[in-house]
Length: 458
Image 1 (cartoon, one colour):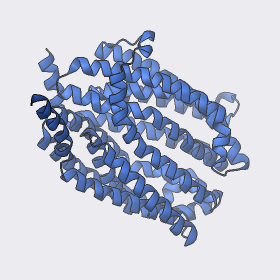
Image 2 (cartoon, rainbow, N blue to C red; image 1 turned 120 degrees about the horizontal axis):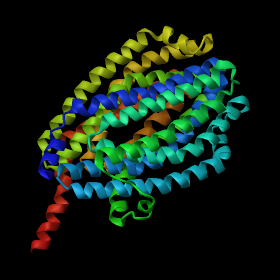
Image 3 (tube, rainbow, N blue to C red; image 1 turned 180 degrees about the horizontal axis):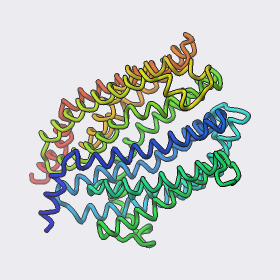
Image 4 (cartoon, helix red, strand yellow; image 1 turned 180 degrees about the vertical axis):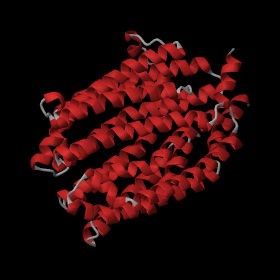
């Protein structure tokens, strides 16, 4: 029976894993785009405030991703190697860790949200809207922590469709709340940012309940209260060894975006609002890349666990080619329809004038981002977790931040300069990732283990 399950995990195709991930990511991003769209008809200041507040919250969500990323890689590797009991134990441990992380971060952000938001140098209504969003959504971070852990477990076992279904219902809850909050439908009061924030809270709370149920139904994995106190030290060490470097790269990115956002703030509210709108539009360009990269990450981890190294190498390169073509075509389509797309979000001519050139800059950025996302995720699955964070920190700060200031502020290119700088960062990291992937890093990583085995045998 265990051999049949192990074969199942190794023989799942990229398509069967990826298509639910694509729909789930589309819905996640769609929820953000719909919220931005609805708030844009409520107030451009609200869009700017919520956009900045989201950047702050995303920094703390990265803490939850530390264990979630580690769980995805370790559970998938153990499933590929046929170690099913070990995979189940890791599932309990990641839930317990994220339970405590979630409570701690929720309290921290709620108490210190205001001084942290002031670091972005925003004022007036923009700050007021951002603070409202931060304080209410801080309470939902506990649920976000648990849902990330539970989703990681389900995906590692290949149950991506179940995670997708939860996201569909989450979106319905959030969109329904957004409609009520921004339109005053059925004669209800217009609550704006406050109502949108509580809708997110309700959606995240539902997700935890649904994912716990699905974990029990699909994996017979019943999580009870005592499990949050039974996290094994070896599991903590293993999850953090992979998760901290992996999340470190994302944390560096988010912190660099804080600095870059401060540059944009000096350009005025129109540039800040345009950036929020374009970030939402830009998600459509790398949506497919994210889905196929996550699917590839699961497969590569299983192949590495089963010691099918050539299969892992070829899978990474095939995915890279598909992602680069798809992201290029998507960004071209959006650039050509730029004016019409921006008009959906805003009628402010100043924002549209600022945004149009940036949409064409995206065509330069996205192929490099595709290379970066696909291969850095694959490297992490192969156990090469330090390389992405080292290159990431050097490039994000030495290229993205530095050139954003030079192009955007010093040379006066504004938001266009910011995007060109970030494109240079994405391409540099992508090229380094490709070189690293072709060098077969798992061969170097396995040498210390082989040496240790020889020493023991001698």
